[in-house]
Image (cartoon, rainbow, N blue to C red; front, side, top):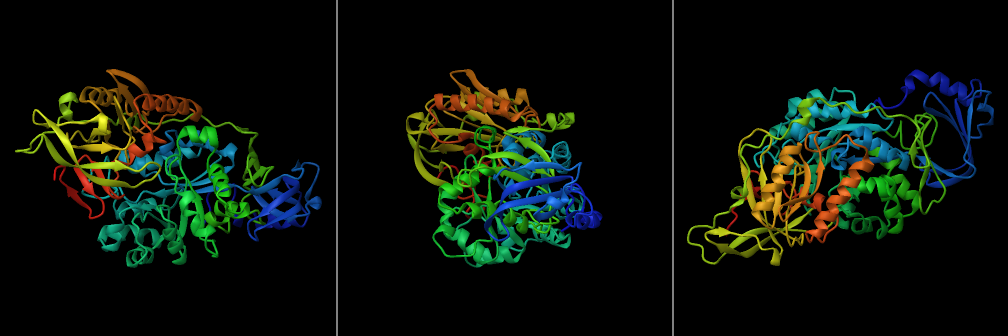
Length: 599
C-alpha cells in the first residue's frame, strides 16, 4: 500500500537514503547511545545510533560516519527508543475534540499515528463530515489515517441518521487522499447474509487494495465468524471473551484488544495470549473510544500499553502490539511500525520499560513533543457553519413528550422490557420487569433504579422518537441528555422525572448539542459540542474540565458506574447485543427485529 503520510515517499529519496547510510551525505539528525526496542526481533539492543534524513531512517547501528557539521545530534544517554505508537481503531469524535486538538493531547504521550474511523460525524454530516476530519488532521503532525465509514446507518432500517453511505460512496471515498481502508463493518448480519450493497462496499474496498476493518460482536467462533473473515474483514475490536480473541487470531484475523475510557475488555481478553503458547503477531492494542479526561490524565495508547504490561504481558510484546503488529494489519509494515532503514522516522523515547512514560516524540524525524508538551505550533481549527447547526428536532419537547401510556387493560403493573447496562462493557441485557402504572401511564422508579428514556430524531425534523426504560446507572434524581449517542447520534434523554428530562433535552437543543445533567429543575453541568453535536474546538484540557464537572453532577444524581456517559451513548447502538433503543423503537440485536415495549 502506498504511504501518503510520510514527509516524502520512499521512491523519491532512495538515493539519499543510500548515500546517507554510506556516509557520502550527512544525516539531518542522528540519535546516539540509545537502547533500541527492536520490534522486528523482540530484543533490546544497547548502544544503538539512528541516522535520519528526509523524514526517514537511513541507518540503524553505528552512525558516527553519518554526522556532519550541520547534523543535529540527540544523545539518548541510554534511554529506550521505540517506534512511534499507533492506535489501530479509534473514533476521534468520542474524545469530544477536533483532530487537531486530539493530536495536541496524544502526541506528547507517544502516539504518532492513528487509524481513525470518522463514522460518528458521517452519521450526522455525511461524506462532507469525513472530508472535514481529514482536512482538520492536516494542521497537526499526527498521522491521522482514515477509514471510510461503512455502516451509515449502523444497521439500516432500525434508525434514522443525518446521512447514508452506499457502495458507490465507498467507491468514491477509496480514491481520496487520507483514506486507508473501510471503517468497522458493523452490519455483520448483512455480511453473513450476502446482502448486495454491503458486499458492494467490501468489493470496492478490496478493489482499491485497502483494508476492511471489522466489528463482529457476537460470541460466535464457528461458521459465522468464518464467513465474516472470508468476506475480507481483516481485524476486529469487539471481542469480549478470551476465546473470541484466540479463535480470531487462529483464523488469521487481527484481534484488536480494547481498553478505552469505558470499555475495559483488556484484562479479560489478554488471557488469550497469556494463557496460551501461541504466536501473537495477530494481536494489537486499541482504544476505540477515549474521553478527554483520560487523554489528559493518563495518556492515549501508552496508557493501554502500561495496562497490558500490568496484566502480565511482556513489555516488548506490548510495544509490538501498537507498532509493527498494527502497521502489518494495515499492510503498512514496509513504511511504519519499526525502527529500521527506510521506515518513517517516527520514534518515542522513555526511561523505564516496565512503566513507560514518554519523554520525547519524533514524527518524520522532527522532534514534535518533549516532556509532555508539543514543541511545534498547531493552527486553530476552522469548521463551516453548516456543521455547527445540526439540531433539527421535529417537535417542541415538554414533560408531556415523555409520557408512556400503559397498554389497554393494564392493572397496577405491566410486564415491560427494560435495558440493563453492564458497567465497563459494550453489551447489555434484556430484562422483563413489572413496572408501576399510575393514571394510565407507566412510570420510572428511582427507588428501584428504573429510569425512563427517549431517543428523538434530530437530523431531519421527522418528529419520530422511541421510548423505553433503563436500569443499572443508580440515578436517585434528575435527568441527562446527550447527542453523543452512537451511531445515529440522535438526541438521547434519560431520567427519573419527566420535567427534568425536558429541561435536559431543551438545554442541548439550545446549545447545538453535547451532554448535560439536570436535577430539581436546574442544569448542573453541560458540555457543549457545537460541531455536529459531537465535538468542541476547545483544547482537550478545557473539555476535560467540563467533563469532570459533568461527572460530578452524575455522581450527585446517584450514578455509580465508571464513564457513564459513554455507556449511555451506546444505548441506541443497534448492532450490539442484547436490547437497544433507537428513534424507531426497541431493537432486539440478537435477532435484528423490533421488540414491543410491553410483554
